[in-house]
Length: 519
Image 1 (tube, rainbow, N blue to C red):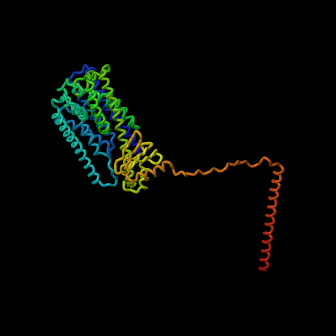
Image 2: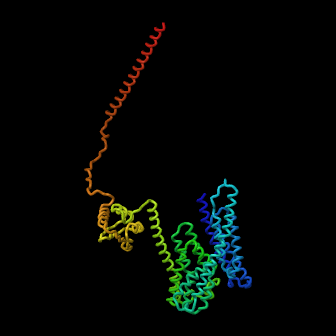
Image 3: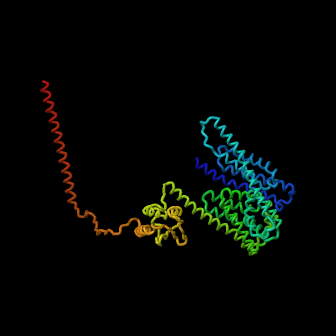
């Protein structure tokens, strides 16, 4: 049952993409170019309703994916918390309704309190009541803490931006820090302040590079990161990420949809989110270096959306074409590099914990014999060692593959950290006075692997095996054998008959003697 339940949750994860598509469709349908007959006041009211309703539907879709002890109670709680957050939080920020991400976070945080608990049927009513009371308290406390914490963090970030955003913004390269700050604030739905401050410096090279970096990061870098990450996943995660790439491409001009995608990326793949921030800074530097023209105006920078008809995606401009190409390839390279580093760290961490669990404790003060065994194990065995050389207190060990080498174990055995030449697959180990002994032992093991003997055993002279000669048997010999068999059978029958007669005679004699004794 657990396998089927897990598969059900995997299927439900596709529901998270539904609110994003519905919000994109409603925003597109309510645009002035598609429905020009709708009045402006009515259009604004319908857009505001869509921007409030579909993020709440996103929170409910996330609730369907998370397991709980009572599904109806979970959905009702998430809905109530989201509605209460939408009604109470705007008293502090009136522009929050255009992108209510903080309300979504408050509703999602309550899911932690409603995870399934190990309840037994034989427990009394008092224990059930205590647990339910504890759950209700957490349902109220967790969203409150989430809202207060996010507001405090955002307040400090806004104070930092206001104090550092001075006249030197248009002349200093340090303004590159505002690009990742804008993306972080956009993830939480509070990016209006940076956009308004940038509009005050319109026309400068720094503001142009800032606008270009934000636009290409959301339009090109974000789908490229999601697509690259989907290539290294399996099963339902690959399907989900592939569909999320399509959704991100279709909805990257809508501020609320971009914020929800960034929020999902921040929660489930924080490493990929960090790659997006780094690539945005690189795009800022490239735009400044190439002197690229602005892709759009300051007022069109996700306030709350980006009008694609006002974005100048000119492929005939060499600077913009190069910038858009960098925005695609730089995140791909950074994602691959981060995944490689994470893989190496994971392998070393697993080997370290495995050594700790089995009591593997060999250091620089251990005996030389134990060190030889430890070196063989840390280097991946005899088959992974290609060559060993000695240079004073140093050992130069060449391996066949880096994947089988445990650098953590080597560092624990040596007084200094091992030096690695990954191109030539060399490991430089400073072992001290034991270098000559270790070099001799490892060299002998490499030259004579698997304990093979030095003297070859001579193979014996081969000989022929002939089949038995059945062809020389004649019919006479076969008849003689049959007659001998019949004679033996007849003699056995006669012997059996004589034995029966002797038994009958002895039985009659015993009966006569018993009759005489009775007379």
